[in-house]
Image (cartoon, rainbow, N blue to C red; front, side):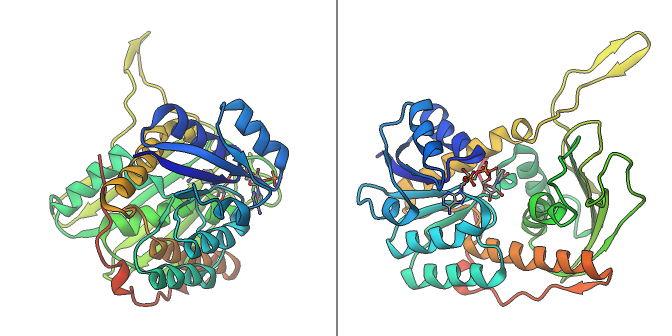
Length: 344
Ligand code: NAP
């Protein structure tokens, strides 16, 4: 079976996913595209040699009876509307983060999906498909280090441009840790505080960089998550979990070790797209395979999108206030209690 896909948003990540579906993965075919910038939609059809209809908007694309699944890859504020229309039409949805720009929007999606009666939506939190994170999660689930007590993690980019402001450390960067960490330790967040260390000279007037987020979970795990987006030296993701019996650490990305001229060296990546390329491929392949094999997606759910939205909102408040902010999540509906699966 080939799943026929409509792509809403043919910007950077939309084009990458189109390329994946057409040239790397199996079981899917892009049959429709749309973008507010129609030229961009036509260009995607041309560049990827698609046998696809260009629609003027998301409503008409979702209305195409031949489309089985919709990829929502437009800019964040447009996501909620497209996801709701797709659920209403009973189509599967792969939605890039954010699911919606606030908790209320995510809850509207959660309600619509439950009303539909089966899972349709997967949110694009690709870290869960990264081989290193999968190994780390296995180690924790198999109780190899006992109960987790503390997590120290870092999300470092070499540089960002002038459009990247202080709040984007949460919405564009930390958001991936927010999803990955509660999934890793099967725990929910309770509160967050933000500290701003001395600012790097490589930042600009509207960006505090670095930032340190201290999150507490309901079971008492303390998480220190550093975001440093002008670190200069490379794209570097670190995560170390301290447990009662030992420590489990995200593996380093494989790189040859060179010994030369009295030095030992290995390369650090520069680009997040390369760091998580396999994870992006796996998340989308899994989306397609799950629909074909069991008739519903099994990756991060709309509820995970809601958790991320509530937590991100508290992080933003903590940035503004300098205070510790409570993270108040509603109880998880039974509909979303089934453990989400991970594939390696
Ligand atoms: P982008 O290059 O700006 O692409 C977004 C596209 O959507 C643009 O072509 C934009 O058109 C279009 N668009 C805006 N409003 C629309 C609407 N109402 N209907 C249809 N299309 C609309 O951004 P991007 O980097 O691809 O990011 C897209 C989304 O993916 C964002 O939510 C982002 O956070 C997420 N993302 C996730 C990851 C990840 O690691 N999971 C990585 C990158 C991006 P205009 O250019 O004319 O505005």
